[in-house]
Image (cartoon, rainbow, N blue to C red):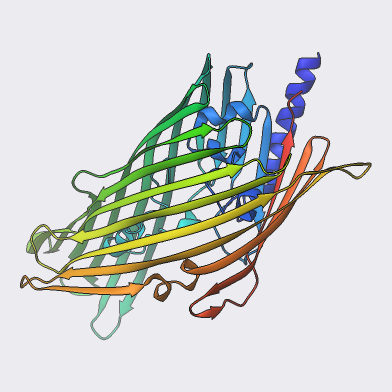
Length: 463
């Protein structure tokens, strides 16, 4: 009976928290946001791409929301259910971790090119449904293994029909237009943690297959009202698909080492590759009284995209005081967004972005033991970012142009200094975290406007 009651309580909490947060916007959870989005942090949200990490957060549910405005990314919901000490299952919704997987939501070129090659597909990030990732975590001795599967999709359809009468030409026209477009990405991930004393190795691999499926048909039928009927049929029939080796591949690993009682360090890196190309097959024809008068078929290919991302980080977390987290982290990397045409009909473009981030993060739990609060945790971080962007254009005539700019010319938020602040509140099984960005200073000056903020609620149902 007790086990049944516990399961019912878990399911009830799952439904309530998922309902609250599934439709609210957030980029990450509040604790990670307040600590500068450093990678060394142990957090339940890390199970997004590494299912084995669920083993450290049994029977927990977490949901986040932000207050940055009316629009934003659908925000993370994490659900974990343990099946004993060595197995856990779970799901995450509305999340993407660039280290451990590829997503059409995070792709630089996928959505943009899908919009250009299809009529009105409306493929925007916030239009994607909150399809979940599914996770399994296993513990075998001291070793841990995670298996993950994901599927994201967006569908768009449109239909219109009508009749018009031209009294001067003594003609009536019937028209019908149908459009169906869908973007998909399906794939899986595998990750592991192999521990050997104070040393541990954490590799991961992810593979996703993106694809576009679409069709459009525009049909016009005309006939004379009096006299000899003349039926004119004009049709534009289009199919939209993918062409070539389309994939989103990610692999990487990190190493961590504990230096006795004084702290620990971690270093890691990963590589992501996106390749895709779109195909448009358009058949246009006309007939008069069933006799063909025009027939044309055209197949177009978009540019081929071959995007490469190289990222790395290193951090050290010394134990300066008891129950006081302070960490220093460097994040760096570069990505190459490469767009080219197989037939050299247009200019090829490669944009290389170098980035560097230096993060100092601090967190101190305080035992309160009052009727209204068990623990209160202030936290904050400073993040300094800088980089540059190089654009190389290879002209059809063979000449090459290169432009180098500061990263801040693209987006003021990408360069400069940012200060984040937050706190955590714990009462029995419930934790509420709040975070906001206090300051963002860059070469363009102080960024004004409402500061981005995030709120996260976590319920721990583990005994």
